[in-house]
Image 1 (tube, one colour):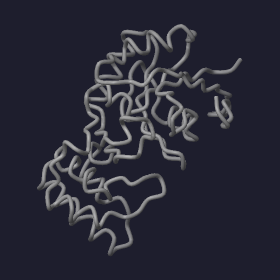
Image 2 (image 1 turned 90 degrees about the vertical axis):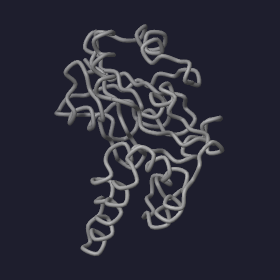
Image 3 (image 1 turned 60 degrees about the vertical axis):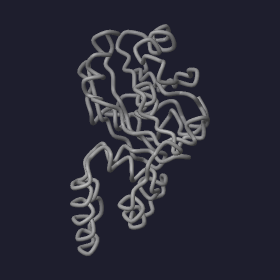
Image 4 (image 1 turned 30 degrees about the horizontal axis):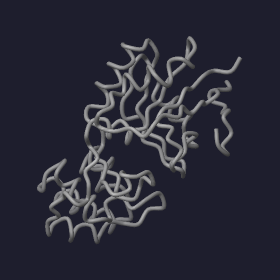
Length: 226
């Protein structure tokens, strides 16, 4: 399970996180079949399964090679004004900014940039992403993933994560949470099904037990201990 403690205390109870290793996923893969092949044989009654958002997006064909992107002047200009963050490049790359523009539209991105600039003057952070929306925030820049060939692709956020989570939960009979997690304490559920509690699962996954490197663990089983 790597160097992180597999156990965590949430609401006074102890839970075990079990990262599930898979093969390198591709657009030819179906997430339901991946869960059935790699996770279900290990699961018990009461278990929750989490899915990392980027591997899900890959199975939806949302990993775009940088070489195939047509990067416009707007993306070149706006990417220069994106603040540095400790958990990755984000939209500071013209290629990832172009994908955000493609996802949300030029007008919304321009409005978000204007609101973000005013917010900075007022000492606020995050206004750009609040206006641009979730799909802009979920874009992962090339080199975010160290796993070829995805180290040379921009990965857009998954399509309809809430609907996907609900469908998967119904199919496998376990709660499902689609997560956006980083290594510095950022943990967000962007889609949930089967009655999973958003606050609980974000607390249970806050230290990113799946890792963010080449672990090939896009799934994680969350199980109450005892």
